Length: 215
Image 1: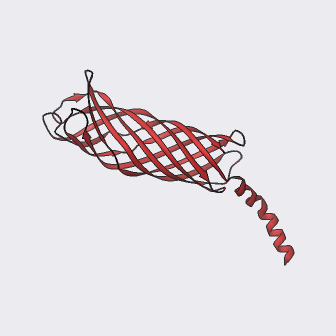
Image 2 (image 1 turned 180 degrees about the horizontal axis):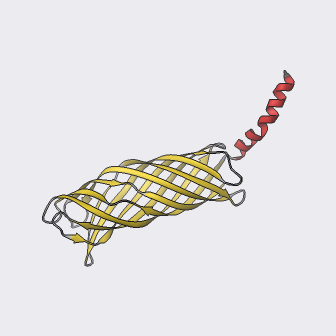
Image 3 (image 1 turned 90 degrees about the vertical axis):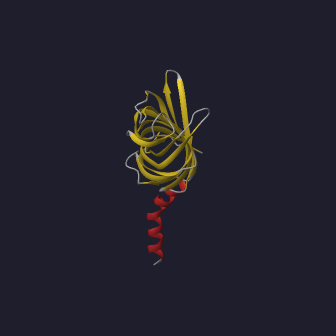
C-alpha cells in the first residue's frame, strides 16, 4: 500500500510542480483594433426635433493596462483599465448632420482567466470580466464646432479568448479576441451644449496584441 502511495505521488509531482511554478504577479499592457456596429439612440433637446437616429461608427483603437495574479496553472485574476475610441458620424432626427466626432470610453475591469494545458509553447485561455464605466462620451463635430455628451457609472461585462506565447521565464506575448457589452447608457450634455442622448449601447469587438511580464 505504501509503495502505491509513493508511486502515485511520483506521477503527480510534475503536475504539482507545474502548478506551483505558475504562481506569480503579472502586468499586461496591450493595444488593439476596435470594431463596433452602427447603433441607434434617442435624442432629446438636440436640434429641432426629438426622436430616434442612427450613429455610424468606423474602426477605432483601444489601449489598456492590467495587473493581476496567477493562482496556479489554470486560474488567474486581473484588474485592468482601458481607453477606446471609434470615429463617429451622426444625423439627428431633423436631418441635421455631424459628419465628424468620436465615441470613446474609459472603462475598468475585473477579469478572471482559465488556462488550458499548454500545446507545445502556446497556452490558450478563456475568460470573463465585469466592467465599470468611468466615462463614455460622444462628440458631435461640424465645421470646427463640437458638442459633447457623457455618462458614467454603468455596469457591463466582457468575454474573451486568447493565447500566450512565452519568450523567456518572465516575458510572454499574447493575442486576444474580446467582446464587451454595456447597454442602456444615458449621456448628458457637457459645457454649453444642451439635450440628452439615451438608450445607447456600447458593444465593442476587439482584436488585440499584448505583452505580459511576470514578477
